[in-house]
Length: 451
Ligand code: HEC
Ligand code: HEC
Image 1 (cartoon, rainbow, N blue to C red):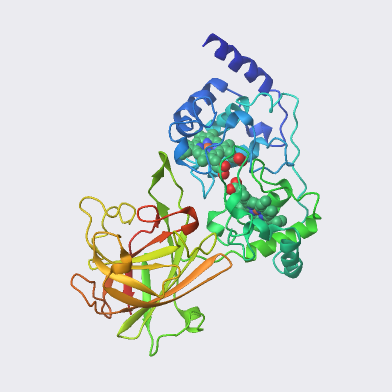
Image 2: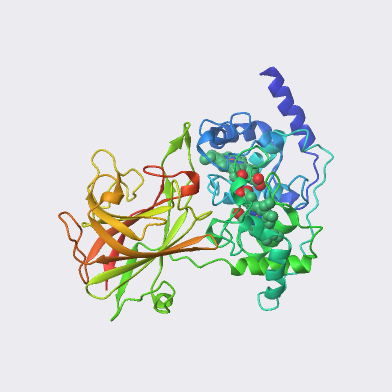
């Protein structure tokens, strides 16, 4: 205790002399004892009492909570391999890191956030030495959306090998993607560049330029500071930005009425059909560790012709797996849309008290999907109903169409009616991660409405 205390005091003295890039006047004086208290209260359960990344909940997340004693930071405006600015750390603490379990602490008073910044620096004293200065990189000039050279950006994307990790269309399915590990030897996935909402360090062109020039230390994502001129970094950033798809997070999937259902998944009719996006979450453990969701979103569209509803479902998967444990998807229907069983999600299904569901299951390589009403996902190949499907995989994305008659052919099947509303949800399995049964990603329940 005595030792710790004197360390804290001497660091406090050292840190208070660290010159900073800006806004020193607005920052409070260093109070490491207060920082330590705030850290214990807000951060230790993940980052560990001493900041070694070994908090009680740490093993349940990927990416892991950062080992703060290493002083390696991903989201900086400073050169690769150098320390972040205080403002970089302040921003992370204030805004959190989407796509990871790092929460935002915008409810903490600003003064407390600064004390946390000082305190986490003090956890890596050999990295944050008192005489260190930080230098914010020059990101060049933003050319603006209309002046950015997209053709050049697109060329650079392949020339610089972004596709090797992020995939040709940015869906995180590049050939190197399945084997990547981070500095702490944990598996890591390349960012899915089409999911702007899931970028950890911000999805605007300026954020992307910063990632390109500063790199993401501790991960396989290198710095391109020496490989591109800043002007080209902007062209590339605008191109990457253009890969982001606009999501429609809605609690309703509207099926519009059409005279004739489209035969193919690229029929122009689909471009006009409303699309609903659903976030997916996992709920299973391997060796006591929660496995993060492999499939993080499903996009759904639906049309009907008064007799049949046609679903078009799309999701991103690292690679196409048909053999062994195949990629798979199930549609769950529930007659009473209001019931929204178990917190509104399919995560815990089936468990004690679960309702029987109307399930349509498809696996990669199957010519048609199978349907049943029941309480288990066992042996779907033997289920009673057969539903015509068409499926294709391209550039990291599955597109699946399933036809379902409005009226079920068996007892307890869900019947769909014009202007009616039933519950619909999805479960998805990534074959290459050996997912099957309970090992899967799950959506929440939303309403399927036949207009
Ligand atoms: C629920 C768990 C959790 C809590 C609580 C938590 N963190 Fe984190 N934190 C994470 C995870 C997970 C990461 C790693 C994200 C990544 O590597 O992309 C992280 C990363 C960080 C980073 C690294 C940012 C970078 O640029 O690399 C900082 C700084 C940080 N946390 C500070 C804090 C502070 C300060 C607190 C308390 C006020 C806190 N965290 C509370 C889970 C948590
Ligand atoms: C060797 C593999 C690899 C290469 C090559 C690579 N990246 Fe990455 N990239 C990654 C990984 C892994 C991450 C995720 C880092 C993390 O999760 O902390 C990432 C993250 C990103 C992010 C950050 C998204 C966010 O969450 O904020 C952007 C933007 C990005 N990469 C763009 C690019 C571009 C553009 C190129 C080509 C110039 C490129 N990357 C090259 C592996 C790579």
